[in-house]
Image 1 (tube, rainbow, N blue to C red):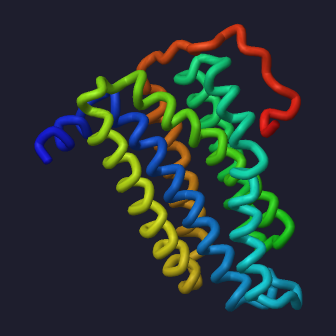
Image 2 (cartoon, helix red, strand yellow; image 1 turned 180 degrees about the vertical axis):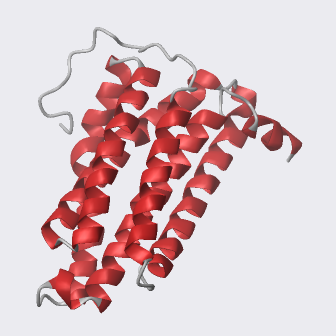
Length: 213
């Protein structure tokens, strides 16, 4: 336990841990808020079955993991991983601004598009997370690092899901959810700026046209 506490305060781990957990929180906050709004708000669902839209939201968020993860692994080997993470987190701010607009306007189309973009960003960050840990941590700390990263991610998923459901239950809920989304996206980007350098292991790698093959 003491070793995990020390690791949480280390620059070689804390910034990466923070970017990952804040991103997971945001993804599930938006998904939960969207599902609640299509379930209890007639304006957003436009007559569609709320159960179908809820299932569709989950599918749209997860689909990029099947479609993009292989290419994401190649990108993580081809480019400087720390810089790549910063670029993704900067782009995430723009995605979250779109998410906020979708919630405030209760736009079904924009909400689904935002879920797709959030899922794509998460699928790109995933390989980076697992590739950076061995670069930053010695073998003796990898078990603790992986345990903290996975524990933090699942806790962020749980809290984000609960927060999204609670937030939109109130009249001021969508505005509160938007503030949370923007604040966490900004926090994730700020944390990424402190991620230590991580040179690309294969800078000459030629990207596959179809990495899944």
